[in-house]
Image (tube, one colour):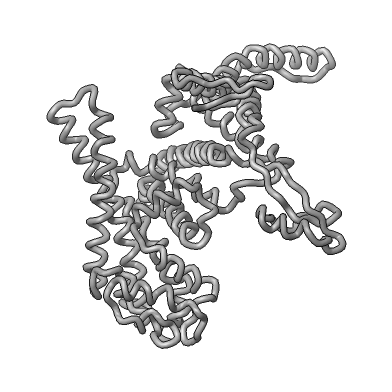
Length: 459
């Protein structure tokens, strides 16, 4: 039974009222539907008063003797209207007090930040007197909308760069100077953006998982299907806690893997075995690195197909014909092959750097500690993005648009002091204004699904 407080009495809430409460919550002014309405509606409604204001300012300027004219151009009113609407709508979305985060911080008495504290650390430090010059305070944290802000920034950058490149292309073709290298850049830009973004995300997943959204972390782990003990050892090697040739007390982690996968326990002891054999990394698939990569491809392919096939069929359910079903099946197979190749290339690149190529190419300059301390993971991160070439070109841009904001987020804090929230609001407002203005003036420049949605909404 669920209850709510009404005055001093407990009033039971009927299970029939739950859907109404969910609907009422979704329709609140500080939720996503109201945000979308304020952004789109405000960017349309504010254009007229801004246009009138610009005309009046121009008239007053002429009366003062300034040579200023209000050109009949909708771009400035559209941009300013979208800018104001985006600023207001994000402030509206962040106005929910109940969904704000708070963090205990240890600061100097002049207000300078020193360290974040957990609840347990705060309790321990609150007991004895603090060192002179320090104090504990609780700060309001912002950043809940950071992913959406970065999405808007990425789309705005795509519009600006795409427009600049399109103008360069026209001028170069007109001058008959358009080269094959420039054609390749145009064709593979989306693939390059994805490869760079994917390498950043995978590096963060290994060494800075707190920089990624929790759900995204979980999904990568499910797709990778890697033993968490192996990730723990790689992180320890990266931090200098797992060292070859020394007894560091961390051998028990790999020894348990050796027992589970039928390998000699001595293989898991870094003080006696240098480097750890790849067979442990293969997690029971045998000593052959190529066979391990093939099994990884099959596992990831099967994992992806269970998601992509029903999704592709559902998208074509309205007009599902024999040809439509065949297309849905082929699209699902291609996307599943992409994910399978992504995972297998990642693992095989690690093996290549550890055993096949690394020791032979750099026998004296690169040590096993350097390889397992980050170089092998870096090789996997650098190479796995090449799998995007399996996907169709129309899909590459959508995947790049999905991954790029998450890669950008790894360089920024997921939560930050609320006093700096104006910076995020400004970035979102400028980016959204660029996207909304372009969707009205030059809709073909807003690429992908977002462009199609905005064209339907605004036109």
